[in-house]
Image (cartoon, rainbow over all chains, first blue to last red; front, side):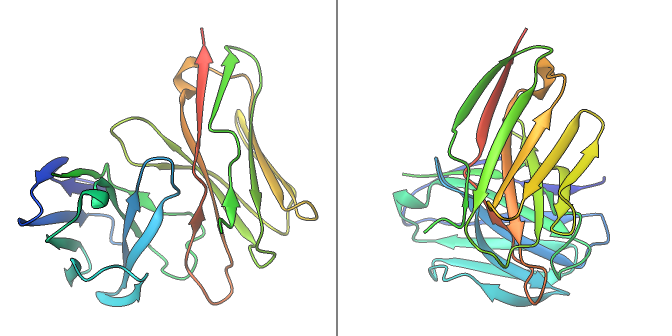
Length: 115
Length: 113
């Protein structure tokens, strides 16, 4: 399989649940990212991993917890979310973590609904 | 405060005509710009880029223009095709010392057959 794969595609969870989003890239890229896209808002960068090390946490609440066990896999662990966390969560990767000149390769996203 | 703005949330264009999507930015340190295209239920895909040393970059039917003094870039699609109907995002980055791209809110383009 090629590209960036995200699972699940859709997720509905209660505010007391714990769930995880998974992202996998088969491109040999060195950097991976989590973005959040809410309705009528720009894509918001959440976390950056460069060679498996977290290099950026963009003031994200602790109810979102990323994990990068290797340079091909990225997780976003979710617990005690709020309804306003409902959004499309996009994973991306890039070969060059320093201002990738060819942009990112995005996954299709996980549509999260918190009820 | 949004550093990258796409002030038109939507645009409709007749097939065969030119589509012009606009993007404005406020940070003068931005020196690299990308356009992404997003279909429903898919992630954004890279379309075309431009660096601040150029004022124009062309790739087939897609041309991006950069006006640094006005802090404005535009994407031209000629001729527009129904398959171009999608949401288009612009993104900007300062390549010195940072790797963050700042995205606009997107413009939904509808090409009418």
